[in-house]
Each structure stands twice: as C-alpha cells, then as structure tokens.
Figure 1 (cartoon, one colour):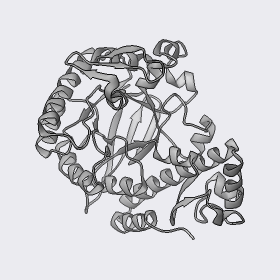
Figure 2: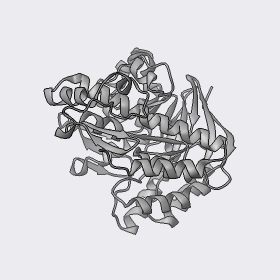
Figure 3: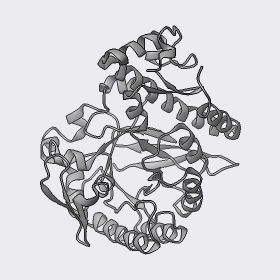
Length: 372
C-alpha cells in the first residue's frame, strides 16, 4: 500500500482543504503538523508522550541518520518504525536542506553533492540514487526526493540552474526508487521567482508523484513574500494530492499556510524553543525563565489541556529550567506540540463547519498576543 490523500471538504472562501492521508501505518488527518524527530527521536520525548500530544505522523532526517547510526543498522531493526518504536506514519526528508546548509563543507555538481560530515569531517557523496537507497533502508511511509535547497537571497541565474537541477534529480530519484509501500514525494523549488516556481511545478507534476513538497521557503525571506509564493504555487499542484510546506511551524505561518491550501507541515521550531524555555500560548509566547514567573501559580496556559498545563505551575516549570532539570524541557515540549496539534485540529474542524475565516482570525490574534 502506498499513501493516498482524500479530500473531505474544501473551504469556500480560501484555498484550504480538509482531508485524510492514508498510509501503511495509519491515517493522518489533514491539515497536519508533523513533529520532527531528526535523529529517530523527538528530543526529550518518549513515543508514548509524543502520541499523547496528538501527533499522528513524524519526520526524521536522512542526512543525520546516514551519518549516525547508519542506514544499515536502522534497516536491521526493521526500519525506523522498529528502531524508534513509533507505530504511526513516518516521513523522511532527503537531507537536501542539511547538506546545502553546510556551506563551504559541500560542493555541488550534476552527479550530486560532495560534503564533509559536521561530526568528524569525513568526505561523503549524496546522489539522487544513493539518497533513495538510504531512504528505502530507513523505511518511512513517505520519502522525499533529493533536491537543491535554494538560499535567500539569491540571483535569478543561480535559482534557475538549481531549479532545473532539482527537476533532473527528481526524475533520477523516481527512476531509482523501488521500495513497495513507500511513497516518494517530489519537491517544488524555484526560490522567490514565480516563473521558476511555475516551471518546477509543471515538470514535477508531469512526473506524477503521489504528493508534493514545497521547499526553499522560510529560509530568510519575509513572511508576506512566502505567502505570496504559496498563493502562486499551490494552484499549480494537483487537487487530489497532498501539498507539504517544508520547514514551517510557527502558529501564524501554520494558519496562513492552511488558508493557502497546504495540507502538511513540519518544523523543529516548537521543540527547539521549548528546550530553551519558550512556550506557545493562547496569549502569545511565554518565556518561562523570566523572573516574573518565579511565584506564578497559574498553569503555562489556562486554556490548554495538555499534561503540563493540567498538572504544573509556571513557577514549577521555571524552577526546573533554572535548576537545569531535564523534566523542564520535556514538559515544555509536551506543551508546545500539544498547542500546535490542537491548533491544527481547530483548523480542521473550522473547515468542516464553514467557519474557517473567523477561526483563523482568532488564532492569528492569539499568536500575536502578549503574556502577563
């Protein structure tokens, strides 16, 4: 079985869709946010804690798992599902973003990308074919094609060459991908140039992937520009296949992305800022380390029903961070993921009940609020 996306309902006043992604390891209700488990773990969380937040599908990263512990060891455990004991759907990023983030440590050529490990400096080569072999061994439900992530800002000439190369690499990925039960998604590139986004979408749609990622956004451009590119790109993609905005996870961007027809999101943001003591709440972000919360008996968010908010005060969680206790990171991560996954559930219900515009407006106001 490969993945299949079904549209349940379309919003009449925006590009938003309510759907369901069926995979070999269960269904994912969309629009959906996928927590990131880069190295086969969502940091500070057990699989049981992660499931309790409402997570259905998670993401792991090919680059990091290739370097450590190695794809063969993961395969010996039956793939990522057996290795990390996550029974739900998994998506693996191709590692393209990580490789291209290495800067001087990598060199791009038509065959692929030569790079040096950030761990020990050893030399490696990623090609579309080798990445497909790694992702097949990792065994996720969805594998992403190997692409060239275009930085921002960049020249039109560079973006044009990189976009064309990504399309050629996508074709090579598809030709070399053979694992049954694993679906390969293509990735639309083009930077912030609409003409290139159009050509990328046309070429990849012609290849007939079962789903499409939109890459190369949220890489430094202003949010209004990202939304503009999304508004241009999503109508170019098939109506009956999922659309995945890669690397985006702030509450406001999730809402704006859903309004522009995105079905799937992922980002390290909620877990990363949680480990640094910043919480998403219905009144904006809360920096729990601040001295003002030293004796605050209230929960982190009075309108949240997560495990952390049901059981602990701001004062206690602040104490954990100040004392350097690991539990602080765990409770903050539970809260942030629960908050975002609940936000996605609210958006899904609002689409079903034809009240997305008012719900989106309220959620955007919450995201911009100030805590007291």
